Image 1 (tube, rainbow, N blue to C red):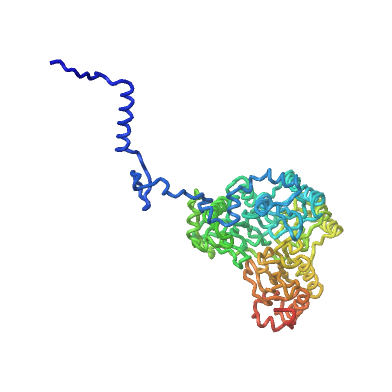
Image 2: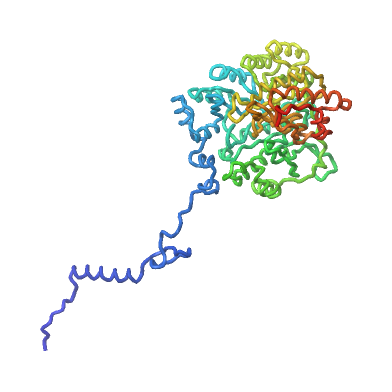
Length: 593
């Protein structure tokens, strides 16, 4: 029987489209490609138990530290690298305006310090590796200081130079001038490796073990050409000590390389090495300590670079007060720090006790002033007294002229805020000294003045409580005029607890403070470095400056009357208790507190 119903043998195009959509929906309901996170932190493939927005976004970090945890200065560095602000420097110069706080900080990476309110202007700090200048550079800096700045330079306690009172409109001209002289100011402020110091008589000192000037220069150029060397958590100091007659105060640096001799029959081959000192930070009254390491001279720059990188990668970036190298080593211990350093070196580090090394050669505390023979026959260097480092442009040019006429055109700066002219022939020393004297520069100084250093003070620094430079010179001249003292006396005058003049290592140290609204000082006594290493003890908690000269006069008069033979002032002060020293003084109640 024939069926009356009709069934199509194929689907129409409309039917096919409908069925395709239908079955696709069915399949998607059965198999959905989902991945999300549950509140417990598990990854789910079911949208009913997990959600894609439950996973927290990873916070941006800077040197491994979450940005929200960074201190203010570290956030500024993370937001804009201070090395990449040339256009900003140009804009500020064009507008003749001072920077905002965050750029004030960044400008320091270029050696520019806006020092208001002490001075409504910029200070430029240079970078002079090992403290060595040419006469051409000295003249160029004098011209720059005269044209744009205050008309003088200030020599610093890092064998360096600062020039002040530049207006914002001139900062780019100043930076370009510095570069044209073959110098730089890059990285001389803020969180950077400061000027690399070296023994000022290295290469000419008859008693030194090693010429360390190539190492200071080598580390200087390594820093300039390694961008990551500008990413420190805080400032950093490095010094190279040649083992000679003038100190570079290596034990006050974050890293101090001290040349030593090892004789035969020891656990290491005989020769000249460096001992490595770590974590000097005299603002915190701590000297660098011997690590037990003994390294070859050719390894020193590499070891410094490795240690600095360990600090960069692991120093504290959340608390500025705990961001110096000292605090990393306090947290880890020296052995862990050395182990982390060795991971970054392609050679092993030797260990050797200090007892296996010969004692350091004697230090001449007056060797940076006066005429002294060099290791080269018939040549001398002349140490020029520059009280508290103030050097007017006329004297800068006079020094350059003497260096050219009587020496080899070389000038050296010291950590004692003075300078040397090397390579003067014996037959011409007197003539050179006379020409310096005619320019108002003395190659002699009293026992106190020759050892006097002072920070900038409140005439040029907003942190300082006192006029340190003027007070230091007045006190030194006051004491030298009254007492004939043979042995040097170091007077360190600093204006605030940052202690740029390292008051705690002075025979006498003065820390600026206010006393009943007047400028005054805390007085500490008996500090020293190197073989005389020791932190000064407090003698007077605070005394007004006007009452300080008679107090020091009493103290020195007692020293002159009661010293044992040729006992130094330092030894005299150390063999007495603080109570005994106070008993020598008549203190006014209103003057002290």
